[in-house]
Length: 184
Image (tube, rainbow, N blue to C red):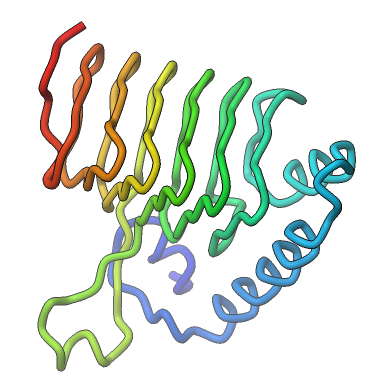
């Protein structure tokens, strides 16, 4: 298996693999161009998002600049997706976001995992776990979503939350760690 195949399958992989580094740098170049576009150049912004992301649900997808990700192609967003400023996605694993989702400013979605043992961590071996977000979800500002999390449909995640575990459908959840406070 290649290091990328290992990465996408959740196995340990070498994060310093030259092919992965090349792909990361190519994505950074595209993001740099995207983030420098005039905000009113909506047509070019949409075109670049379609080129960058793995799947874009429709032409109503909108991501405010600046936007950051690692690979881009591992991100799928549904119809009428909106993300505000400083949306950051570390997409070493797949990130799937449903229809009609709203992402507040300064939100981070992280799929990469590192050992807590410093010796093992310094080998640059890591693994990644996918993140899935359902339809009709609102993620408040400054939320962090950790590797392996699934958020159901019709959910609101309160601002500043750290989502460490799955969140079921039809709830409001807040806090660090994020927990359900209300069923809808």
